[in-house]
Picture 1 (cartoon, rainbow, N blue to C red):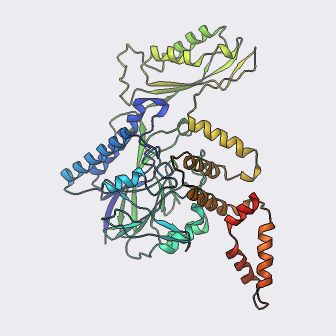
Picture 2: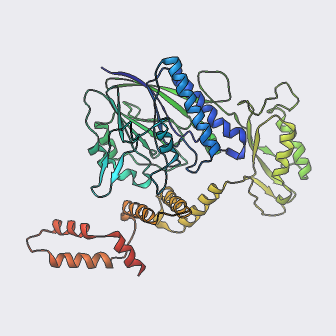
Picture 3: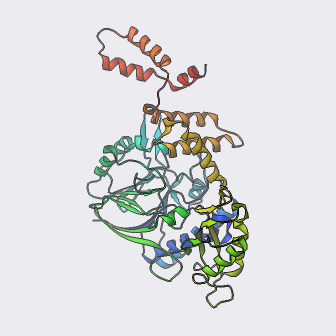
Amino acid sequence: MTNIKFLHIADIHLGKRQYNLKERYYDYFRVFKSILEKSIEKEVDFILISGDLFDNRKIGPIVLTDVFNIISKFKERAKNKLNRDIPLICIEGNHDNPIYSTQSWMTFLADLELIILLSGKYDKNTKKIIFDPYDSKTRRGGKIKIKNITIYGLPFFGSSTAHIFPQIYDAIEQNNEQSNILMMHFGIQGNDPIKSGIEISESLNKLREKIDYLALGHFHKQYILPKKDPWIFNPGSLEINDIKELFENYERGAFIVKILGKEIYHEELICEIGDNNSNMISNRNFKLLSPIDIGETKSFKETIVLILDSLIKDLPEKKSNLSKSKDDLNCPIVIFSIKGQIPYSRLEVNINQLKGEIMNKFSILDVRIFSTYLISTLDDIIISEEKKTIEEIETDVFNAILSENPLFKGIESDTIALMKNIKFGLIEKSPNYFEIKESIKDWFMSYVDKFDLPKINIFTKSKKIKEESSEENNEEEIEENIQDEFDLDEYIDDIDN
């Protein structure tokens, strides 16, 4: 009976430069490096990375160099300490996914033999999922066997995910003696209040007959399902990627998993704020403070004095013994809000000036200040206190567009993902218009039941088919012929005309 141990992680987001801070850029690499060291310490057989190794599909040479160095040195240390390799078995997440291309930085790492990239394929002609055995020469494939345990992998399928579970079931071989592992990148609905996910359906549950461990990524919150006899595992991200994750108090981290035959035993590794030399995964310290009421102040100058005095009890001053280097994980990013009713204009509340005063006085990496609940007796002006990234602004715009049309209710996140993918495809130097059209078709057919479509084209085809069908054909056969004849390309062209 095979005894195997592995590490399961996801959503590393290497290359992310949160708040444009160079220290945050290195934080994501630091935690990745530390978890690789943990895998050597635990003497695992392999590492699963279930998507989003990178933060962006368009990374720069510096990011690629840092990734190359970290993985190369890790492999050297594993061979020196364990006298063997620890393979990094990966799939592509939505941040890694090469839209409208077969090449990505993940395939580049695979070509350098730094990772094993599993990428099962969907054949549009046969409507089947194909898991080709991994070929060590071409460094491509959809499944790999390690110690009699078979690991299957699929890239990010977005809105099509829920529709391919039956095809996945058919493509996976039954393994009655040993375990099957499936790697995918999607979230289960209800396990992340920030993102929408896939509902647990009959077709998803049926995979349990052939899959012993479903290794997920995508949601940054750690969860295991079901609580009794679990088989769905999502480790969460290794670092905080969004303040909302802090507000929701996400547990994040990794899983150390032991498999004996078909029995699975898991150990949860949880991320811990700050570097306290514990057995947990060390993260940058995000310090969330109580709101500060500035309603008693008469001017913004008084507000600055009040806030600085209020923060002394919570933050170390720069000249104190508690002062930390910005490279130290215990040097915090501070978050708080100001509230109250002020007798002067909101235009006088200069958040950037306030931030500068706080940064000059205290030993912190950064400060994020919110003023959502600040009211002025002089005006009704609302000032955005948080600088948003281009991606966040883009998401807000797409959300606003979709909110005007009730047809997209309930599928906003998947529709936004489609819109972003189309945008990425169109801004390429040489756009692949055929692939862009194919992706729109795939998405459209996934949600065809939600839309009230014009019936002219379908009616014309169905009338023609029924006239040509013999009287012996039953209604069911005629409807199948109609479905076979229906061509979305022609339908789109007819609508345009």
